[in-house]
Image (cartoon, rainbow, N blue to C red; front, side, top):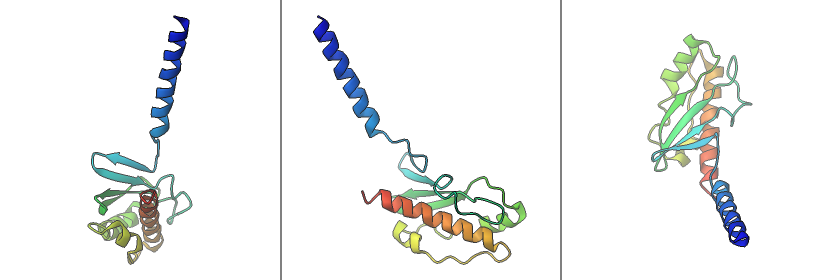
Amino acid sequence: MKQTIVLKSFALIGAILLLTSQTTDDPVMTKEKDVTVINTTSLATDIEGYVGCTPVKVYIKAGKVLKVEALENEETPKYFDMVVKGLMKKWNGLSVKTAEKQKVDVVTGATISSEAVIENVRRGIGYYNYMNKK
């Protein structure tokens, strides 16, 4: 009787360990239905705009960029709005391979913020490409 309980306990513990080892808690790459979302908040802490970090979310479906979305940042709203309007759609519809290498011009008047957003997008797509080669 005790052996059966002990064996069942070990089997249960083994199953739990197996299941938890196969789940990932990746703050950078998550899934929302059939869309992969790359969040550069923790991936690109070394990339700064004019005031600070300029994280983005890159939405990818079937190997193509759906959209890029700016996340909360400390940039001057007036200038960062120019970046959002001028840059965020530049990657839409591109394959992830093309998007990672895409040459995107900065927004005049918001050069440093633009460069930071462009690098965040590149880093996010690069991370996606790297993780999907495994």
